[in-house]
Every structure is written in structure tokens, then in C-alpha cells.
Amino acid sequence: MLEIKALTASYDGIHALRGLDLRVGDGDLVALIGPNGAGKTTLMNTISGLIRPDQGEISFDGADIRRVSPHRIARAGLIHVPEGRQILSEMSVAENLDLGILAAGDRRAGPAAAARQRDLVFDLFPILAERRWQIAGSLSGGQQQMLAIGRALMGFPRLLMLDEPSLGLAPMLVSQVFEALGRLNASGLGILVVEQNARRALDLGRYAYVLERGRVVLHGTSEDIARNPTVVESYLGTL
Ligand code: ATP
Image (cartoon, rainbow, N blue to C red; front, side, top):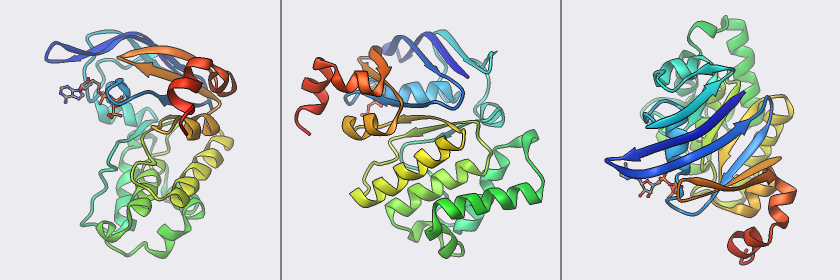
């Protein structure tokens, strides 16, 4: 589904991605872990078209998306929930969700399908249904994260990319958000998620990639990564 080869990207000559390979198969749930500054956000922004890579390949369903604009990438079904959520805080929950439909572009389904998708979002996150007329800015951080995911779902993603969805959330809300991601994946949605907490990431994903200094230093099934001595020492030992 998503295939990345030898990807490099930089900021004013400073290399952030240095020849990175990664693959997300149809319906996979892949977690990305690594220390601050490893390049996780840069990778997501490069995949979703916000940053132009220097070199390498990015293909989605076999199509080269390296020079495709962000809205077209979303239209193709690759939808990004950025770090910091970026919901429209002056608008209501319902309006934020409705805006998510725009991402689907030509794939936009009719009103009946949109209503079913909204029901799915409300079923995943009942609090959003309860607060649908509330201004999004008045939601708690966890609820805003749910809204950001809900809005992305309204664009009928085929692959959902999430950048640190647990950031700043209370543990119980993190569990709710991760449980929702598990359910979405069980229903066939591909997911690529950046997660700071390695333990949580490895519990959530079927596959994991460890990034350091712009490169993949390890990848494999979550069980294998969780047993890797270096990972245990660097990422799991102190948790
Ligand atoms: P974090 O967990 O802190 O978000 P990350 O793994 O997502 O880290 P990136 O934010 O992708 O890492 O950063 C990768 C490298 O690129 C770092 O060295 C960072 O300092 C640098 N970098 C990131 N954004 C910019 C920017 N806008 N301008 C210049 N350098 C940047």
C-alpha cells in the first residue's frame, strides 16, 4: 500500500531523513518509535506532501506521490492526523467533522455514506456525539484528539497516519484512543502511527519501525522488536 525507499529530506541542508525504507501493507497497523529528533514527524510530513523529499521513492498503491500536493494525497485516501491536531477551534464538533468530508474529493460518497461514516465516528467516540454542537476549542485535549481522528475518518481514509495521538493525554484517554485505533484496524483500515512511548507502540502495532537520526535502525514484528536487547535497553528498560 505505502512503500518508501531510500528517502532523504532536509531543512536548509540539514539532513532529517537519511535514506529511509518503510512499508505499510494493506490493512497493517505499523508503529514508528524513536527518540526526539529522529525524523518521525518529518517522515509523516514528507509522505503527506507537506515537505518535498530530496531523493528516494514514496508510492501509494503503486503510484508515485513524491510530487503530489497534500490535498491530492488525501484524496487518494492517505489521510494525516498531524501532531497538535489542528482542529478548527472556533467551529463546532459537527462542523469539524463535516469539513473532513472535503478531504475525500472525488471519492466523496453521497450523503447516506457520509451519515454512516459519522455514525461510525460517533460509535467510536460517543463523547463527540454528545458534544456535537459544542465549539471544538472547548473540548479537552483528549476529546480534541478524538475529533481530529474523527475528522480524518470523514475523508474515508484507506491509510490513516497519526503523529503522536497520545501526546498530552491522560492515560485513560490514551487507552480509549488506542482502543479505537485497534478497532479501526480490525475493520481493515491501514494505520501508521508515531508513538513516543515504546511500550504502548509495541502493544498497539503489529509491526514496528525504530527510527534514529533519520534512518530505520530496526524493524519487524512488534514481538520481535520488544525482545530485541537494544530496544529493551534503550526504550523499554526504564518503563
Ligand atoms: P519529535 O518526537 O521531537 O517530534 P521527530 O522524530 O518527529 O521528533 P523531527 O521533528 O522530524 O523528529 O525532526 C528531525 C530533525 O529535523 C531534527 O534534527 C530536527 O531538529 C530537525 N527539524 C525538524 N523540523 C525542522 C524545521 N522546521 N526546521 C529545521 N529543522 C527541523
